[in-house]
Length: 141
Image (cartoon, rainbow, N blue to C red; front, side, top):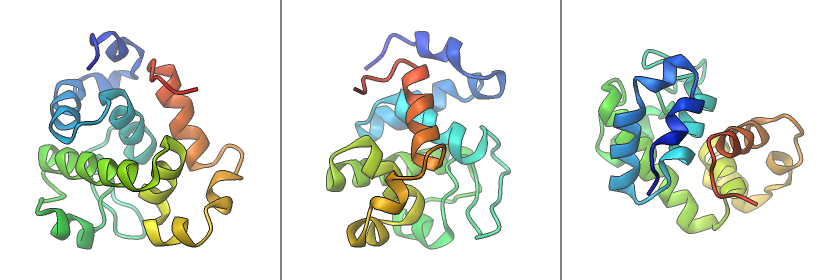
């Protein structure tokens, strides 16, 4: 998928996770740079990250989503595999990086109902993720 040069553009905290990100992305059939951008945006590469909403780990999986995916969200490698699969599902359903990122963050139902609040938020989640994806050399217009 990639030649690995994207790893040099990661913050130091992210470089240690690059091999696991690459493996999880390959397994899910997505660009590892996109998964790295997601992890960077969701947790800043902190495997112990927990949100006030209850999302946990590198990819900030919600417990119910982790159960659906059959992964332990507190295990960093399983969390990466689950997050990669969930992101791949959103990419298949929504077709663009922006909409998939919005669905990953807000939930697919919210994006189906009205994606505009998530796409029209300068400096918001989608913009940050896409900017990081581009920084890592992601093939995005």
